[in-house]
Length: 359
Ligand code: MTE
Ligand code: MO
Image (cartoon, rainbow, N blue to C red; front, side, top):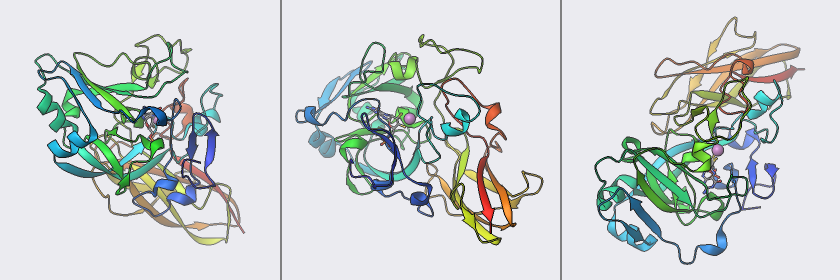
């Protein structure tokens, strides 16, 4: 479905929500499109795109509409390698602590990396002429999301200072191929370093505002609530999610695998988020009493994850392999999912844990 591998874990058929097996991401700096997770809050709006254009409005001196041809002709093309990570990535680890009704138990692969090609949002905003008093830039998609209250398109915003950074793109290509419909064709926003939700797909409106977006997916969800609070959906409750926090997981061997006792190479990914980089990854087979430092692959860009590997001794019998990443601000992943549990199940960046049997 949607050109994905047949072995995707499909959390929902319609709207389509799916992630690949861990093995599909092993050792690949760039994720093939057929293994790239997809998160959708509404149906892919394929039929309505024939007359597509991008409207730029709000606090700008020259509001206007751009076709894809206009954008290509008027602005320089740029390509950026960037990781997307859903705020719900690794939610299953939180669900294991305490149930999270109504939210899919995403595993560790609701994150992936592509090269994105398009124009800089900064260039389009400069042409539109941002007015004094502007603080945020809102993106609105062409989809309809029945789960929103009231039903509306998917949208969100980022601060103006991020929107005008060179890494933020309006992209029409992914890994050098035309953007597939499920990933936002004809045009999507790519906001490197921010939660996936800010990279709005099927974007048809960019609005310059004097505050954050009031869209349901910014004002009422993708917000972090205290563990003892029941979400009401009231706009503004909890902490708005934006910059991604340092995270990692194991990709190989798979959780639950049986491996020959003795030295085993463990491989995984780490993602720093924001404009930080991955500084170190530690792996332990004794619950964190002693650690082996992983070897780090190159980080393709500031905005990209970093793959790692470490060889550890697997004893005969059951063992838990634990991994944790540190970022360039010396932030470390928290130890236990119990400590980061929250009612909507976002940002599980607790230590990675896989259970192996040495035979
Ligand atoms: N944009 C629109 N228009 N509708 C959506 O449902 N989902 C968001 C974001 N952009 C979404 C969207 C979320 S929550 C994530 S994590 C990413 O898209 C996922 O991007 P992908 O499907 O290309 O992997
Ligand atoms: Mo997401």
